[in-house]
Amino acid sequence: MDLKRKISVFSLLLIVMAFIPAIIVCRDNQRFDSTADNSNDEIIALAAELCEDDFCDEAVKAMVILANTDYPTVKASDNNSYNEYYLLAKHYYNSNRELYIQKGGSKMYIPYAESSNGATVSNEKYPYLIPTASPWDCLDPDYEKNSVCAGVSLRGVDYLCRRGFSAEEALLHYLTGFEIKA
Image (tube, rainbow, N blue to C red; front, side, top):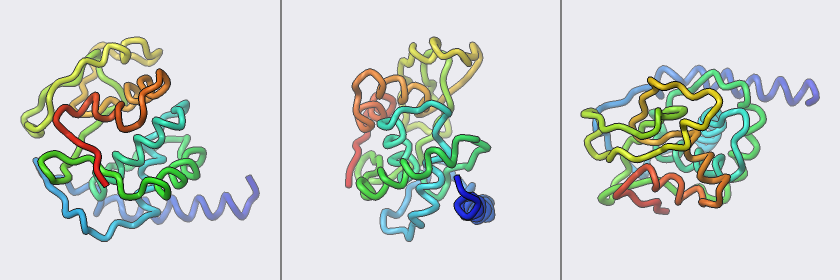
């Protein structure tokens, strides 16, 4: 990567980080206005940060849908693979920019974790989520027996996508009763 591109990516990352304090505002059962003025670059950057080091393309698409749904409450991470996934996330955002997850006609915050200990859990903060089996999380080399996940297992989505699920099917496996809409 040439120096000019590195500086551009670094500058974008600094801009995103400047907005993190405002982005991390989350209320229980928060519903979102689907007409909110979402910054395309911020959504793309957040989706890229959700990607782990070896996510497949379809899982990256799922992260774009998740980031588009959770914006502006997605918490940025310290993921080193950000640069690698930014362009791919941008591609999927541009081709699927209207897709988001909803239940009962409304966008809702979707919690997530890197992986679960074999199943997602119910959580009083998110009563609209139903526990879901995720046994493939136990196959992950970084498996942690005590990990807890309410909502979506990011590694689980990648696992399902690698086995032929579409991004939408993988997300909906974890989100019983939800729909992905434009």
